[in-house]
Length: 208
Ligand SMILES: Nc1ncnc2c1ncn2[C@@H]1O[C@H](COP(=O)(O)OP(=O)(O)O)[C@@H](O)[C@H]1O
Ligand SMILES: [Mg+2]
Image 1 (spheres, rainbow, N blue to C red):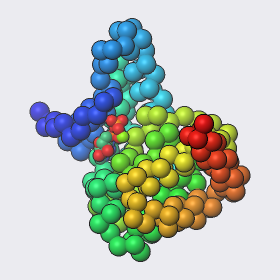
Image 2: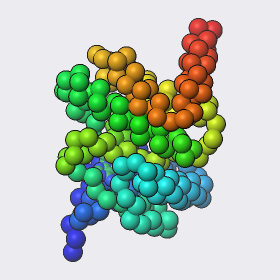
Image 3: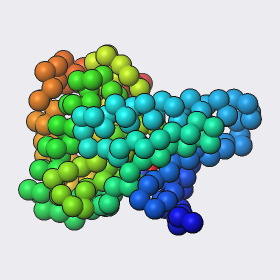
Image 4: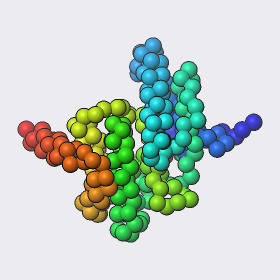
């Protein structure tokens, strides 16, 4: 018998460690109509597996080992390391900046392939234990494919908000580094211009 251990229970999924594999199992949502819930969980499982597979070919993410749509499960590699949200603030500014540059570079790569992550926060990133220059992106559960600059801008906007909220001490400098890393994407200018529009719209909404 291979040992199983629950490592995380979120609102949508359970994360189980089985040997060296991680199983992400989408759990029942009792507030949804049963049939609809089954359908949603199946579709999200399928979509997350596809995006993870595609992303893993270009950036550091867990490798997809398998998907079991019937059980609403994705099986992937376990990534040893710490969740970035928990450790970023303990680092010195130079280290923080280096990591943010890598994050921006990772986003550049997935956006080039029109992969929108959908929930880029430091909680969905792991600093790899074996090589401290590797940041693994997790959780493509809210991801989708889109060519639109608007969708890419919103993806970055969410990360900016997360940095502002959780890593507020140096957030401006950190966000600048993310943008520097992102500039390795040929269309970064278009997206960053769109980001300004998204944000001015946000302010407008808050005011009125
Ligand atoms: N492949 C993995 N390797 C290591 N830790 C993981 C892995 N997948 C998930 N985790 C851990 O479980 C947490 C929740 O996983 P995540 O995919 O973000 O689920 P949720 O959709 O519930 O947010 C992550 O923040 C991370 O700490
Ligand atoms: Mg998550």
